[in-house]
Every structure is written in C-alpha cells, then in structure tokens.
Image 1 (cartoon, rainbow, N blue to C red):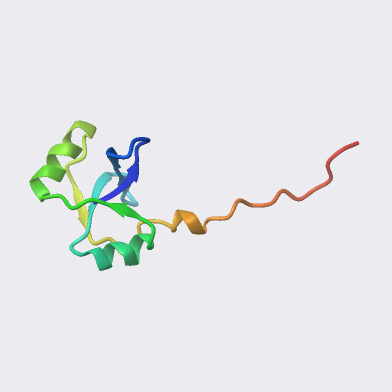
Image 2: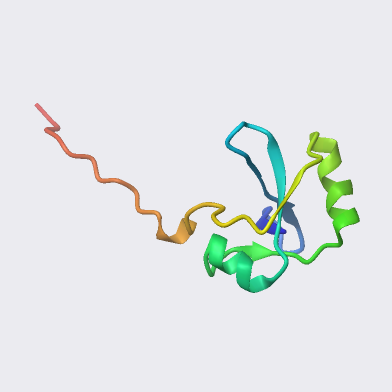
Length: 90
C-alpha cells in the first residue's frame, strides 16, 4: 500500500486514488517491483494484509481495492514547478 509521511517518524498515512468514474479506491500491489514501476522509486510503502487494508479504508467509505494499477501518478520528485512568464513591474 503506498503511503506518505504524516509528520512523525513512526506515522504513515495511507494513500488512495480515484477510478475514472470517480469511485475512490484503495491501492495495493502484489510486489514491490510493480509498486515501483507504477509510482516511482521514491514512493514510501507499507506491507499490509488485505483484511487490515480493508479495515483501515472502511472509515473513509472505501470498499474497492485496485490491485496492481499500471500508473498511480507521477514521481513527485520529478515534478517541476512551472516558471512564470510575462512582464512584471511598472
């Protein structure tokens, strides 16, 4: 399950996604290699049993788990902030 740091060294926050139809889904991978291929080498993750994942997602109204999605999103470390172009000043 992909995670992100939650501000403390021993706390991780689960991440979930949306299908094209808007349904929120838990995201899970059957191997670390597939997770890295879909999310990039810097993605944090934690190993969970399916029942634990379902239990953690239930309070958020998420009952669908997407296994081994091909693309989760860009590697956030690779995203560049666009430069502003234009005339500034008076």
